[in-house]
Image (cartoon, rainbow, N blue to C red; front, side):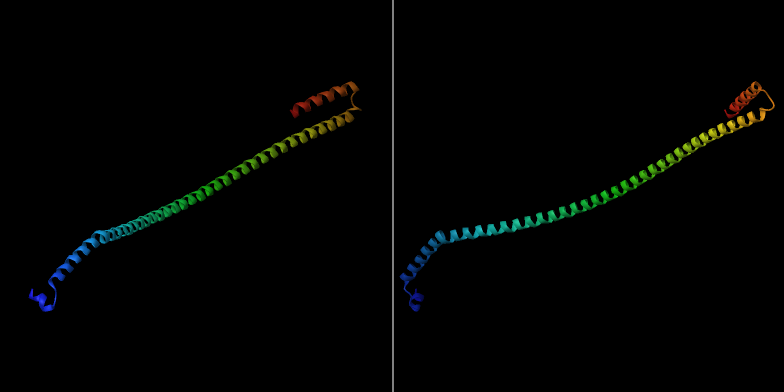
Length: 168
């Protein structure tokens, strides 16, 4: 207690100040510090939530980018396959067109040969008729002075029959 007197402190005032301090401390702790700490904890939780959401968003973005790359790769592979299929189809169509053209050409040549053979046969038949007619005319003219008319017609008929047998 001598210390209090040496420094000029009043013992009762000091105790009253300590009691006032404890009362104010209790009041501040009860009504001010707890609500302030609750608000600070809520903000801390909000910040942690925001950080977690940002991490989740980053992960989702990374996942989306990976999926995008995968989709692009699949699209490129698909496009390559489509181009390859188109090339194969065009080559196949070209081959089919060539075969069809070749068949048509062969058919046209075959038809032309048949037509030429038919026309040749017709021309040969006409030529044979003409030669037969000339021969009969020549035979008639040459037989007029030698044989009678009846004999001439028999000879001509035999000659015509002989020519018909030869032409068949």
